[in-house]
Length: 398
Image 1 (cartoon, rainbow, N blue to C red):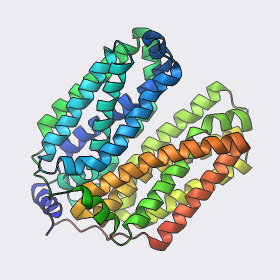
Image 2 (image 1 turned 90 degrees about the horizontal axis):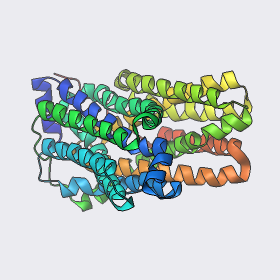
Image 3 (image 1 turned 180 degrees about the horizontal axis):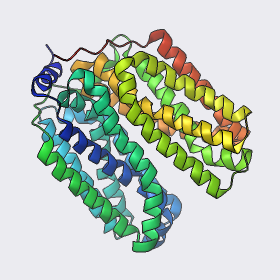
């Protein structure tokens, strides 16, 4: 019996630790808020630190790059450490990151703070699915993951508008100090609720290759990467599409993006019940629905209709991260941390590829070309899932 599955059995005997799940949701909200704050505070940050906005924008790039590397290394680097202590350490890094950024006298300290955030972000995402398996009985893992990922949707909705608004009133440094307070709340909540979780096996770097070699894992990771690539190619260029293709003004664009964020939050919450009923059908349906919506957005150019379709896209994508995290908990339950690292790395690569390839396509054929290519990638991903992605059903709770 594997070391990861055994703690899941203990959880079934002791009951679900929903308080710990909520504390992890706080962690996600605080981490993602900190990750995307520079996007809404870029101008005042650059002016205050006497750097260009392009250089200031690299704070997001640095965080993503460090998160990618960390996601692959953290399971092996912490293989002998209690998972409770590791998660608490990530929250401490979040606090230190915001402290360094808030008081950064120049670019060096600013980037150092963002590096610490990248370590916390990559490590937390890598362990989220494996930890969820140890906090609730297996049939409830999708519901726990949907709660955890709802923190992403909430941060996506609030970080940009609230960050830019508060930045104008109290200054960008104080906005990061507020995020520091969120980190402190997260640390206190996790300290009070997270149980001790002994290391689940001796994960090594070689384990990453071993996991990829298992039947269906590499194909599943490819499909997941394609789904996220298709989404981020779409989402990166949604504003220029709405402005050029539909003639939407800034007010309409803001309202449509708010609708996307709210629908995404609802989709994340609905993912749990959907995945409990049929994981494979959800994995297939979401990219196919998103692909169909992309084609429809290109062919049915109407602001009101487009607003509905963008919201439906947000609803569908809300289930995607939860679905793939659930897939790895059922497909690789004995190496969920290593598989989680691979999935996080695949998503970070998908973000980079989707944005970069989308940019080249946008320059060549406009937003419509980006959406068409995005839809094709999503439909191919759905076909790959139909052909080769499998997972075992959840074990009933006892």
